Length: 43
Image (cartoon, rainbow, N blue to C red; front, side, top):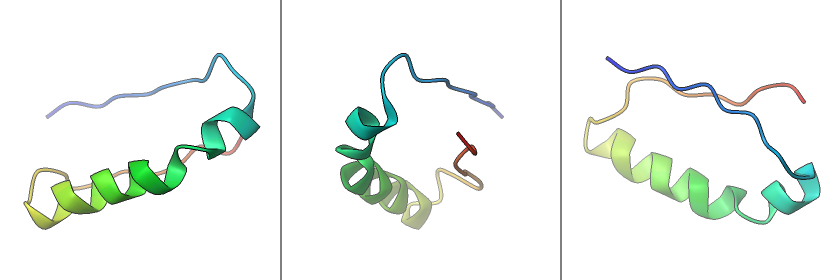
């Protein structure tokens, strides 16, 4: 099991541009059974 904790080095408005694609990526891997948990952090 791996646990990954990230922090951004840019503004949240820049990160927001990629959230839809990122969530689609997560959904794909949840459906394949690769991921069991994930979640966002409170800024």
